[in-house]
Image 1: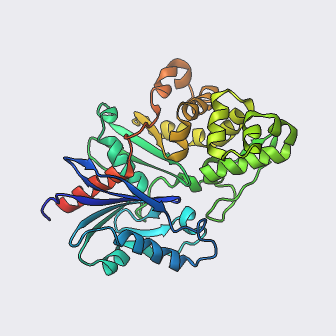
Image 2 (image 1 turned 120 degrees about the vertical axis):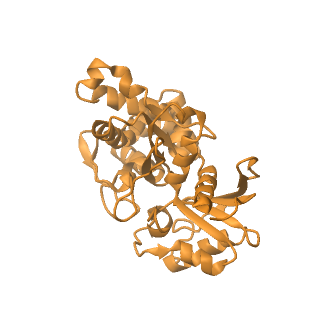
Image 3 (image 1 turned 180 degrees about the horizontal axis):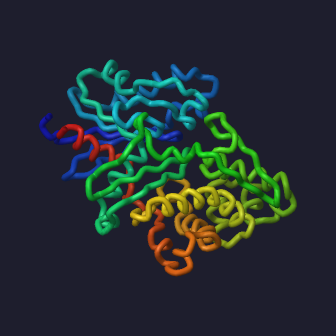
Length: 344
């Protein structure tokens, strides 16, 4: 057991950005800094080994001498050891295990390193906030460049994992999506076709939009989202603005993207009715906010839980929330995980 650190350097590594700050339980986060993540998308053609080395260098540099660091890592990793199995947003289809913990210890042996999955980190923070205090069992899903979820039993603090140290890699579940009566086949960033993330992640929603545009170009270009994109707007703000004005094409695009996610929610609640909070975070879900929740509920209202949705409609609705600012921050969660690791 180590002495409780006065300050922890915390990192949140995503497919788009790498964020870091100093954190302590008493003072919270210092000024958050960020830089683009060294990813396949930002550095096309760069070998995965080189991308991983760039990541290690970027994380090792900000930690003070003899410091303590906690990492929220956007990747499928062994919760027990910190070995990274894969990260489609960072490295595409590459699946050779990467011992990130060993690489960081080699780069900075003076630092005490702690690593958790980014959804685990966000869930630890959410479970520590007032919104979760009256809840016993929580599932948190992140909808961003990638998609994954984790669950925790607040009564025990347990986040269960399987024999590989994994839980909740829902972004790579096989799903089906149809538009205009026909199936849509899209490829996930991991290289496989038909995964949830291929349709419902941030890049997936843009790809679905391209399918809609190519299938019905007149309707697309006359829509609120189409006219904004044609005038040079970025996709994300154009999408949100079109939803705000009730654009039916943007609403249809969102419903197509959330359909497979609603299927996962329905199945999770069917199999584990003790889940009394199903929360969503990540860049996509947070940016879309009440639109995202409303879209999920449209699916669940049409096809919910057998008997329960008819006899007690509020039972399911009351469990679905989209996190607001400061409710599920991977940086804070990395700090909480580090405190737990230091005390072990």
